[in-house]
Image 1 (cartoon, rainbow, N blue to C red):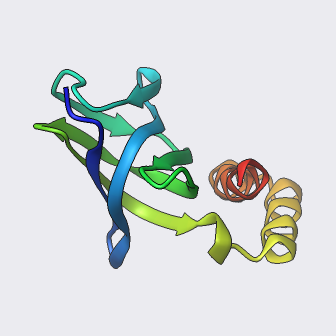
Image 2 (image 1 turned 180 degrees about the vertical axis):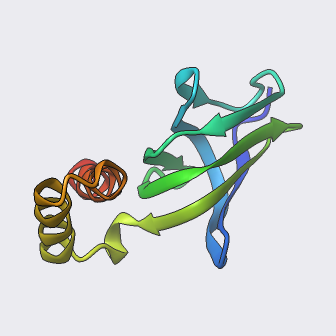
Length: 124
C-alpha cells in the first residue's frame, strides 16, 4: 500500500489545489467519505460541503466545494467541482452577509452555498 495519494481539486474555471496527501474527506450523495492510499476505486457525486485534505507534509487544506464528481483509482484522486474555493480565499464577512441575505430572501441554494463557505473557514 502506498503512503500517499495524488490529489487534483479542479473547479470549472481553474485548478484549485494539486499535491500529495494521506487522507481526503469529502461529502457525496451517499454521505461523507474518507479516501486514503489503497482505497478501492470509486466514482461519486459531490454534495456541497467542505473538503478536507491532509497533506503528506502534515498540513491541512480545506476547500468549500459546490457540486461535482469524485473519482479515485491507482492512488489518484480527482475532485471535479462546479465551484471550489480554498478556505484561505474566502472573505468571511462577505460570506456572512451572503448567508444572511439568502436567509432573508428564502433562497435555499444561496443559503447552502454561503453556509458551506463558512463551514470551510471554521474547519480551517
